[in-house]
Image 1 (cartoon, rainbow, N blue to C red):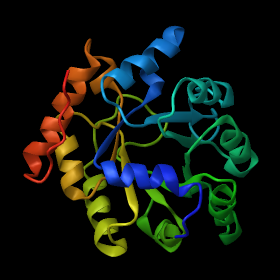
Image 2: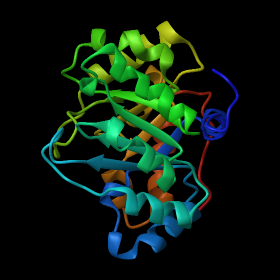
Image 3: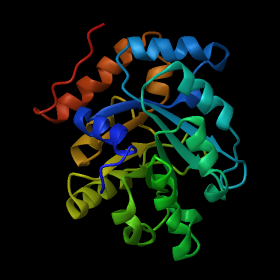
Image 4: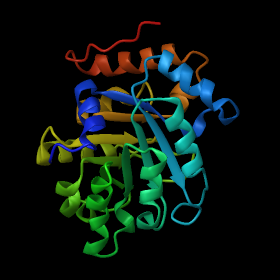
Length: 244
């Protein structure tokens, strides 16, 4: 991969891995600026934003204005996960809004030409990646991994709440790490908490998207400390802790 502007956040995240990314979907949007401040004070290093269109997935969330609002409030890398039917129609708008990393779903690739969006995103100064749902065969993803800066392995089906962590994510993380080496950033999303975070990192995850385990805790710093303790318990090499 070439050393371009889009690699700056990728390099930053790679140097800091494993990194916990709060899923802003569960934050208090009535106090968005304060939520970002609280997360920064807790030691968060990047933010994850889930964009749903009500078509590719049954739920709808937010769009470019929220990404732009968060971009104005922080210098942290902003990781945007597009759970939308036609990502090529909106990728530029999300780059312009301030996204540093954009993933879209391999399930939206209907022909090899659709994968060209990865290079288009990269050419606009943003890191590019693909996400894959648990029920989608890995054969759909593997031909495109070499074109990605990161791969997002979903441990739940995108867009559906209240699902249990699917252990297939661990198998997929391990397979991707073994096959594509240490430079590919691996991200995992869905059901990541103190019970599963350490297992995900042990399987190869660099980036862990976390929702309830942070936002349903009254103290974000303590929530992050618990997550890092879970990670450390699975690996003697992990030393990252939070100083509250």
